Image (cartoon, rainbow, N blue to C red; front, side, top):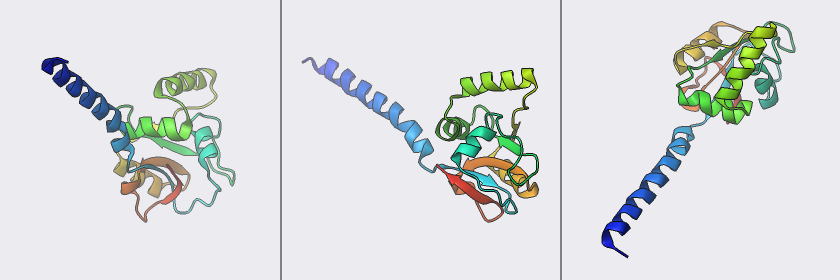
Length: 146
C-alpha cells in the first residue's frame, strides 16, 4: 500500500475515533437532576421525563412545578434530553410548540448556567433542574443521577 494512503488512512481513523470519543468525555461527569432540599416528593427518571415533556405540571404532594432548562447550545442539555427525557432537542422543541399552541403547558424557563440553575432551585421549593454532577453541592438535593 502506498505510504501516503496509509498516512491518510491513519489520520482519518484518528479523527473519526476522536470525534466519537468527544461526547463520551463531555458526558463522563454525568448529569444530575436536582430539587430544592425541602422537596419531599418521590422523584424518579420517569417523573422527570414527564415534567420535561409537559405531562406533569404539579408535584404529587402539591405545588406547581418550576422546571429549569439550560440553553439549547449547552452540551448538558442535549445529554439530559437524550438520557433522561429520552428525546432529541428537535423532538422536544416540536413537542413544546404543540404544548404551547394547545395551551397544555409552557416550556421550562432557561437558566444560563449550572450555577444559575442551582441558585434558582435552592431558592424555590417547587423548582427542578439538572446540572453536571460536579456542580452539585449541599444547597440542593440530587434526585436522579445519569
